[in-house]
Image 1: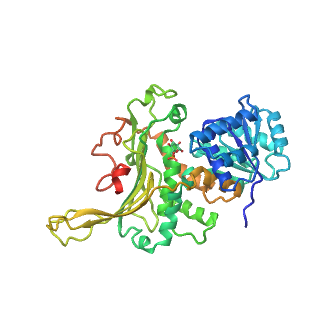
Image 2: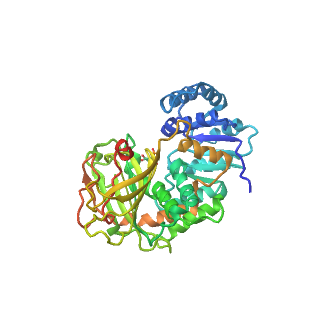
Image 3: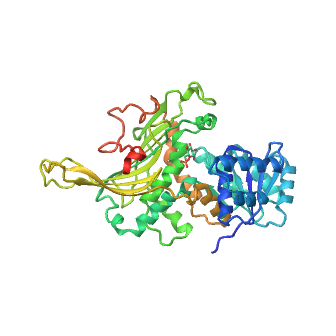
Length: 462
Ligand code: BG6
């Protein structure tokens, strides 16, 4: 079935941070490609008018990626603004008027989750939800129960096919590319299994703190901020079977199967850390037990992966900003008695570079048959014309392509896996900003052979 194209984009939270940092630049980029043919209606409660919103949009694109005069003028001419309270029917009556003849708007909720309920209710009552779809920012709930509550609210006005749950990581080209690389190159698939792979690790490191988002972060923590969503999506792309067809449902079916084969986390599978100084951040509780670093171990009990441990770690205030996957292969049989144990590995860097690398053992320079590491690397910098993640997901939401959005059964499985953490009370250990997390202890989980820290990008591949 051909997806239904939206004929207007409404975004709630038009004067907010996300709009400023990501949404306006993405809309300008879509306009530049000639892919923004619909009115864009910002909604917020700021006491602003349309000129003020236009000025804000211009400032936003100038600071985030650069102003493109023609594209911006086009966006600006399509921009509309509705100011008002999200609980006031008058706001939605005004929105209805702005929508004019649009019969299939996309309503994008770039607002705090506590406001989803009132907005959806008003969209339904005002008739703005008729024929429409809704696009919801992450986090989708705080746990399985609240995700289901939220979904019930959305289902009060929309059907599942019209609920688009954003995970902007899926809009990143290298994440997208994982499936293309896997399923177009039999050379990968040949060793992509429990027979040859010893362990899999995924690292998402950020060398900055919570950047003024202390209030949000302290109610969320690393597991719910990035592991349960972004990194589980990366894991699913890594571990899934080839889909029967490349349509959104076949693809999402395979992802759900991966999560279904993962048992819930146990206390011994988790290390939680908090960087020194976090509790002094505005919005953070003075005795906060929220993790800014987490490392977890998962089992994927599919026939392809059973017995292969998967490790995921994510943290703020780590030494570098990089997201990377390493599959370590099993040791080769001993032929050279003095050779170092250097397993082959396969490395996928998602950011900052896009890298596919294969780690091999080469003869050492002194010809002593000890061996040394060498990497076969294919790496590229993101191109200037490359779609940013938000551009891709917003474009797809307008076009009605659900492939890069999380389906509810997937979201439920993802919460099921991490929900056990809530009642575990596993301790949070302090670490130095700029270090690789809490000082290791013998009982800590770690991949066999240790974590592979992403190197500084400049040094990693050149
Ligand atoms: C967001 C998280 O979803 O993703 C942030 O809330 C995180 O904490 C960000 O920094 C990372 O995404 P990107 O695209 O900026 O690397």
